[in-house]
Length: 394
Image 1 (cartoon, rainbow, N blue to C red):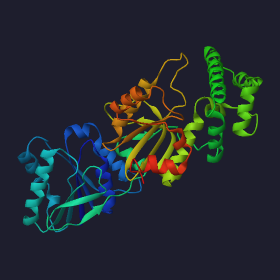
Image 2 (cartoon, rainbow, N blue to C red; image 1 turned 30 degrees about the horizontal axis):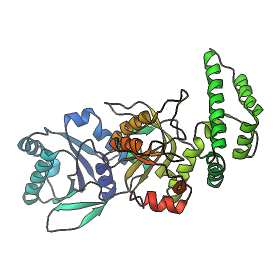
Image 3 (cartoon, helix red, strand yellow; image 1 turned 90 degrees about the vertical axis):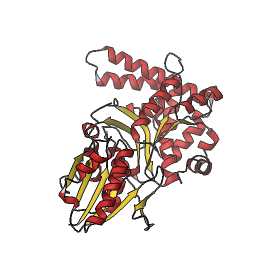
Image 4 (cartoon, rainbow, N blue to C red; image 1 turned 180 degrees about the vertical axis):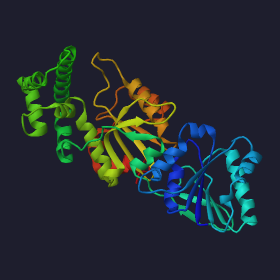
């Protein structure tokens, strides 16, 4: 018998993916799981994340369903399976499951090591660490480096897939930064953008009221915005022309420019590849239970196997001038729960948050960091030292 990788399955699926990918080729994958975990599709998403479910790679896998409450019952169930006999190599990842499953698996394979010709090694990954520690045989102290997942692999492990969202930045970083400094850094610039947003919302509302909106009529209304000299100048400053369309309106009026700016800051600061970061990620939760409604995440990235989700807001008032900070924080907090224990969530603002103390205390309660230091955001070196390094991202 060749190499067999054994995994304990729990809600936290990413350690399973990192271990299987770190070990590499195996003759068989074995998953020790529970009825509840299988009802939630946890093993399915692990297999899909590591590529076993793809058409060009088929690795035999076995699913062993156990009772998570009895060590003796778990050991009895494991003993029924003949593929744990022989003279191959069994590599066990004890990171998942609950404590009962951990103890049962540890005892079973420790006993099996003296009863069969198999070479048996067991490992465990402490939370936040980047190496699987060897826990059996205990006299051997070597570790296994974790596999570094890309964004798709990590999200798939948590039953999250990308919808139609995701895009390339509309404007280059240097030009976006210049727009930030010259326009949004002044009260006049903020008011022009606010006026543009109001007029665009009015146009969309007018079109929405009609049963069959006419694209030509919509485009004509958009071009009508150029009748306002301030808006016309804003468009010219941002794009170098007076051409206006919906993507450009989203860039200006809906804060797309700030999303792109933050995307650039992260990407440049960490030197991320395209498969590690996404702008305007449309999240689709494919889990069988507690499904999260579709959501668009402004910026999402993975670094050293940790997911970071970022909401960008150029204003915290809605069209009725109501404070929406509570709503934003709640959304971020709800999203964060579906990305694993080490996921972090941030709210980026292009200027200092008003009501500093109370609002930031509210954010702490939700487990979200607010990033609103304008001088830091406009200085890449400071951003690297005061945000990336502070959050242990470099």
